[in-house]
Amino acid sequence: MASSDITLRVQSPIGMKRITVKRSTTADDLVARVAETFNLKWDVDFGLFLDRKQEHPLEVGPRVTVQKLRLNHGDILYLFPRNGVKLIDNDPPKPMSASSSSSSLAKMETSRQSPVPVEHRVGLNSQNVSKKTAKANVVEDEVDQILKTKEAKVERKRDPK
Image 1: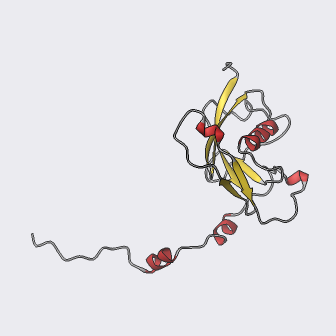
Image 2: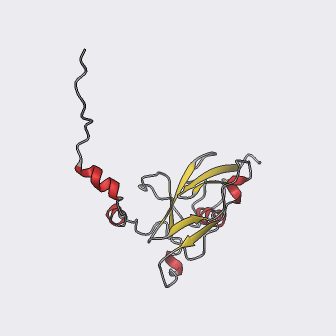
């Protein structure tokens, strides 16, 4: 590995993968490399973020480089699908090896009927999915609903000491 090459980790709902890029790689090329690494279809709308809370999206542009983004060797980027897209890993579990992290294939399930326009295809700087919308799609389990009504104390008899 040359001194200008760095390895970035990309965390997604299906796991973490590593990609090696040069410091001079543009952000657009980095996004394309991530899509290729996760085997994402061309019409997938996803976001790359510098944090898990999705507060700092990765700045994208033809003149923005990995070096200008201040990404260092070993940094983690977070991939979050948008618009109801779900990442699915169809590979069976394998024993841990050096090549296992790069061998899994990710397939996409989506309820969209029409493809996403080209300008929104990888729209990392487009509007963020609001947290309210994400919470509205969550279905709580029956157990969670029951526990929500209970008090969080364990009742027991007093110790005789």
